[in-house]
Amino acid sequence: MAEMRLVVAGAGGRMGRTLVKAIADNKEFALAGTLAGTPENGVKLTGDAAAALEKADGIIDFTAPAATVAFASLAAKSGKVHIIGTTGLSAADEARIKEASKSAVIVKSGNMSLGVNLLAALTRRVARTLDTSFDIEILEMHHNQKVDA
Image (cartoon, rainbow, N blue to C red; front, side, top):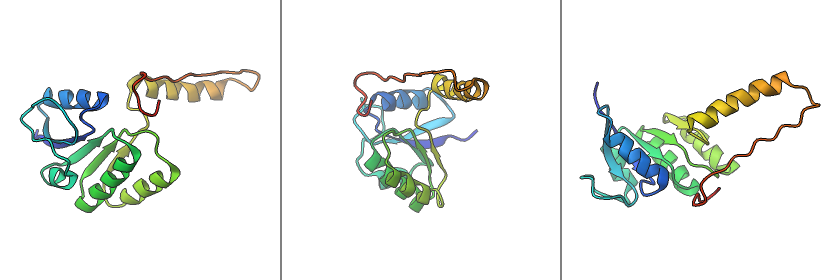
């Protein structure tokens, strides 16, 4: 299978570093660029997202809302895939991403964790099963360095 060339936006963050390593460890993908500080990996660090995307098939984005909206627009203009894991998006941000999705493949999830997504599915099932006499509370927590925890 051909390599999918990916840019990691937010590569210096906790999730970004994990993604850079996962891409480097998987022969089906190639790291086409990083948009934040990482250790030397043979890929030039850049702040120019458009230039990085020219050489890539898509961008994986775990950054901040303003950057994510800009990357969505860029993905739409260049016809690239945009995978969004950014949290804290406003309704206006969501609308701009939805507009960009008319011209680009955009995959977005507020949480990419298998455990969290499984819990969400189980919660929907429990909600259908229990009546209103039950009072259930679910607490979601992140590490204390998460910007929008």
